[in-house]
Length: 375
Image (cartoon, rainbow, N blue to C red; front, side, top):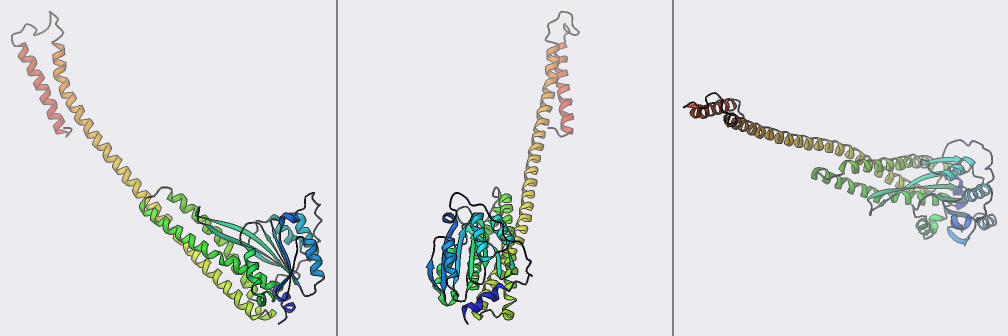
């Protein structure tokens, strides 16, 4: 099937009706040339083979116009508005799509504007050194004879996608939709290491929870946020692929591309299902961790209470013996003041009376404290 026949069908798979809009407003020219900074790669392909490579958008546009049946593949990295304005003027891109590409921070989606598809993808990669997931954003414009990619992050590696497709000219000859498939496949393939990294992090968290590790609750919260962000990136991709695969028969998309796109859809579904399982597991882990933390706190409170009770018993004993010793001291102090006129001071049995009083008071106090179990 000729490549020119396949360029339009995939662009028509999104069934959203075209809403006419005004032309993209001109963007003032800047003193510095933004093309040199933002244009990553630009090439013309004929029958799946690269025939020319250019360093500027203007040269790429002229070459594409002079090659009927050719396809331009333009890659841009964090472009300036003036770059996107030139791209929009050349390929008649809708201003809403261009605005989304400039502003970025869009949700994954598939929009149709006439003969052009605008696709927003969220890439992800796992950073082993910091054990975190980094998310990126990629915008793809797919037209009858061109593909333009606008990256707002370092992932995915579109240079590897280009090399892979150039090594398969029979696939690349199918036109811009083949490039879109390859980009989708690269984004989804990058999800696998992310899923594996998240699974490993969850295993480590489970170990830390039962080992009583510190900062576990915070790590659970951070990992839960990454899981939610991943689902926000991957779930809409299921809808995008469903919109594409839903029009296979109606628009006569090449059978080989149908197989590839279905395979990509299967991989997305698998990744989403696994990560949804991670989300449920993290909820369970958080519940278990809260229970264990409460148990540890109860044990600590119990230990503190036991220690306090033990201290109270010791204080009681000390207070009881202090009171017992205080009574004889009081009697001895009174009769040790050495006044000449005091009751029983010159009494013959005064000494025995004083000692006896000390003994009686001490025994009585001891009996009282013993009865109350203070000693």
